[in-house]
Length: 400
Image (cartoon, rainbow, N blue to C red; front, side, top):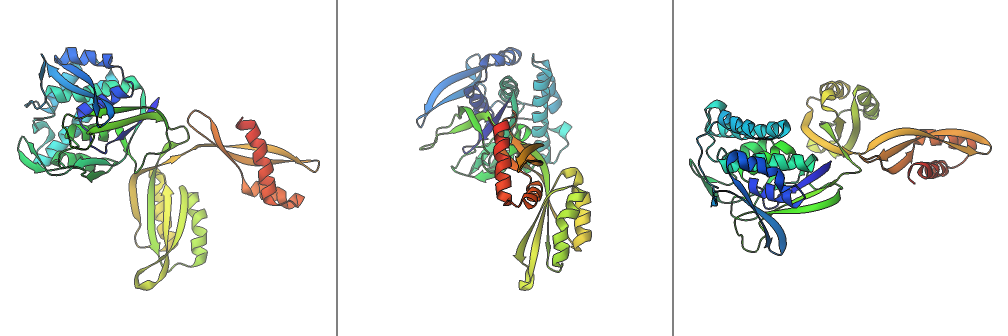
């Protein structure tokens, strides 16, 4: 199972995504049932763009490009087409999910009900081929997670069925509103992120500000169809394994306090952890009217947020707590073990924390301070000597 990073510095479209997925090793033969079901063909070329070898995909019918076709299909019609194809249930479900996102975005833009919307651009066969093809290739690659750093949308205007609109297109903005990843303007005056590309990334992707630690396996480049002077118009997809970190969904609670005693602040960590907080940080800050105060930040699981926020308000008397929902952190898998060490003919058991990656490979070991300090006091050794002894023995056992 792999992790994919969609590096959309030049945006993303359906055909670029398919090309990039082929570039990271997806098997083009899995697209054949879609070709047969839709009566189309994926024309795949190997090209060089600004010195980068990339793949380019064009959906054709009888040798003619069908990009830009208009459709009068409604969502229910598209779902019927998707369900008629010889694809797995997972692929069909993913494709329908993406089309639901597109339909809901168009409905919001036009102020209509979902069942009333005609999906002009994204209901055409080339768009269906792009979306279903992406889902088939994702299944073929065995993708476990998709990471999306900020995506470029371009600048200027774009012509659509209902007229000319500023970039990003209205549907792209609605989709981006529901994304965990962020958008940025530029770097060229052209539409870079299409509604189809945006919907695929919203459906599969988790947003990050930068690429997290990753053991790279392959890199694929999907080339767009517009030539941009001096710039490689490509979508880069990196496949790899995030061995050391796993995703943990969290909520961040924050509040400012400037009239709370040091004793209450010092007690916050213990009482909030008892209510379910994962971490508590108190930062000195300058408040309004130049009064010294503190910013309290609390990391908590979404299901515990209400309870922890209530306790935070009761303990501090704050009148307001900010919540940043839908975020996540990358954490190591952790477990507790014990190591026995012999010091002056006596055996002591000391707890250690072991951090490992997704495949179980241990990459960090740390002794529990309280245990080490207790032993240090008893044998009259520096605590750092005890910690060093314990961690060295643990590394010999778990990191060989």
